[in-house]
Every structure is written in C-alpha cells, then in structure tokens.
Length: 358
Image (cartoon, rainbow, N blue to C red):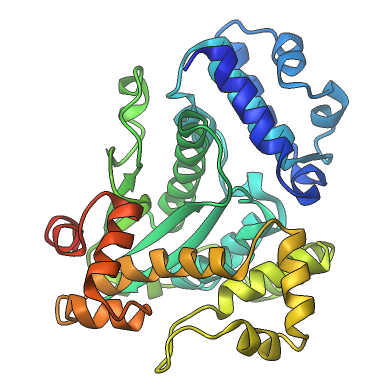
C-alpha cells in the first residue's frame, strides 16, 4: 500500500462512519502529541495538518475539542510524512495520566490500582474512542484488551493502538511503583522498523499476537494496595465531572455502550434484542434505530461480544472447549472453531495452548 493510498483509505473509511465520528468531543491533547513528534522529525505542522485536512484552530486550543476523524487522519498523515510506523510508542510516552483530563485525575485519586482500572474501563469512552476496552481479571494476572471500534488500514490502527497502550502502561507504572507484576504490551501487527529506539522505555512488547492489549502476570493482590495519591474527596469530584462529560454524549452513543455492557452470556446464552431492549427500558424498534445511528446492529455487537468472551473463557483450563462454544451460542463445535479462527487465526485449542496463562 502506497503512502497516498494509506491516507486516502483512512479518510474514506472515517468519512463512512456515522455522524458521531465527526462530532468534536475528543481532547486536542492527542493530535498535538502526534504533531509534536512529527515536528521532531522535521515535518512542518502546517504541511501535516493540510495533508490531514484539519485546521490549526481545532488543535491549537489546549482546552479545545476535535473530532475522532481529525485524530485518526492526523495519525495517518504522520505515518505518510515521516514514514515511521513506530511513532505511536513515542506519542503514548508523552501522555501521562494528567494528559487525560478528568479521567486521568480520577485514576490518580482512586483508592487502589484495581479501583483505577475499573474507573478506566467505565469511562474509557471519554478518551479512548476508536478502541473498545475490555478487562479480564484472573488470579494469576489479567488482560486489558483493546479491540477496534471501526475499520481503518491496519498500519494506522497499529500506530494508534501502540500509542494508547503505551500511555496506559505509563499510567500503570505510575500507580504501581516498581511494577511488582510482569507487564507486557501485545499488538496484532508486525514489529515496525525503528521500534528499537523506544524499546528501552517500554516493557516487553509482543508483536503478531492474536489480540492487542496489556498483559499482567503475577500476584494481583498488589492491585489492592493503597495508592499514595488516593484522595476520596477529589475522586468524588473527578468522577462527577466524568459523569457530566459522559452525559453530554448523545442518546445513541449511550445506548451503544449500554448494549455492549449488557451483552454477557448467562445460563440461556446472550440476551436477545428483545431482552436487551427491556433491560434498557426501550422498545426493540428504538434500540435497533439507535444502534443503527451509531453504525451498528445487534448481530455485529453479538459477534464482538463472542470474540471478547471466547478469549476470556479459554483462559480457564478447566472449561471444555465444547462447553465454551455452547456458552457462546455455538451448538456445533465446528462452527465455534471456524468463527474463532476468523477472529484470531488460530483454533481454540491452538490459542489455549499458546496463550492461556500469558
């Protein structure tokens, strides 16, 4: 794929997203980090912004807002003009907890690292649009998984995910001084040229993995230790601000997040569209319409939930793979294997052998 094709495809795919991708509700902190890194390579910011199709006024105001489309197009333009696909690590390294506004402040003020992780999962949508965060906790560790929220060229997705995960790692390193658990960054794509320059500032980074995220291995009781920056009063104020910011998003966006949260398997499998609508206090028709406004359908979200839950369930060696498939709604084991291979490139048995437990 040529540079021009990369940028063209990114713009086309972002433009095809629903209107929420063009709403100015993203912090300008993030595109400025990409602009600063590109400037260190000698790329003029005006050239980069012109190529991305974003005006300087949108990113110059420290308290200003940009659209999700602006952020991802700037990232694609950085890749095009620098030719360096390892710069995501550099931008993530520039974003400590304080770069994430009220959410970052809430994480700092949380009582324990575990509480901070739960707050991050709850309000991730305020700062992490473009990726979905799912937290899987186990006795021997956990996994903070990022899943794409929409389709963009894989090279751009890799740059954005490496930036997000490096920033999350930086925050975790601050909350857990000395890092008593083993942390590694997982990325789905190959190792980019130039990665060696950032390697010394990062934990182990594993490329060509079946999923992207932050892997934690070790005694997770350390997550329950009090944070030195814990402040209950300040935490309450920060969470209230996060709630206000979340309330400013439109109803369709709130419905999408609520639907994702409610799509968990029970004894009878995943809830049906009718069950979800009842849980969310709306009619099935209203649920269908609001999801459509966000560019999603029940079937797409069900597939997303199955992919998420399959990896979590496979971590338990006591669960039979046949039983996992049934829990996810695949009565025929071959259908589960086929679906799982489509998600990860591996059969459930191969995935468990290679990745379960870390």
